[in-house]
Image (cartoon, rainbow, N blue to C red; front, side):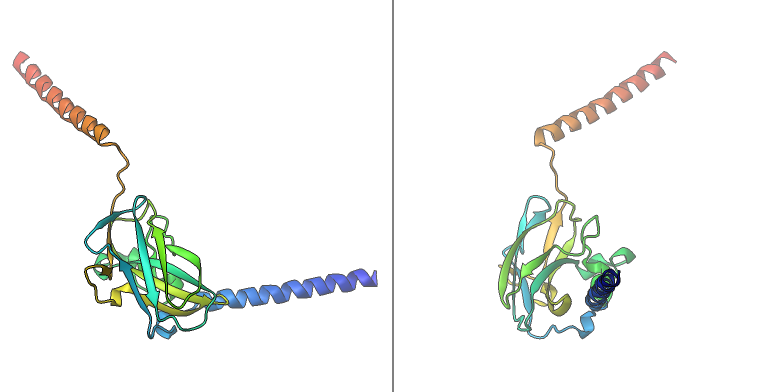
Length: 208
């Protein structure tokens, strides 16, 4: 009985310690601020999409970054609404808290990351398909590095001086998955229905 009690105590203690460290890591990440997280030297831009309108569910973007010299475990990428796309939209409000910054919750489901769990490299490239439910808007791309669950460094493409093939932002449109033939058929029947209504109304008036 004494052995069982001792084993139970040790298990409880181990679980408590594990939970404490998990909470500490989560808490550190949850309270991380842009203003106190290093952004010095980081460069982020998007390749070869400057003059294109992209479609969620059909197009991809290639994100490039460099200058992430602080040692880390992984990288995460966010889409962030362009500043003029947040005006009078409190649900897109900027917050200094990284995890609570609604300006970078880009999809209909308020997804906080475009992609996460990318292997850390100080300078790298990642090609990512835009989710189908990406709202039509203008976005910059934000790259963040993490170590032991804590944000180490970040950079945003909005700070990049755009060129013809290196972009500070992207523009997206609504995904249209209806065949053009179906769209034409719908348009035909819409017009036909209006004509029928007009003819019916004129006929009824003439009888009166």
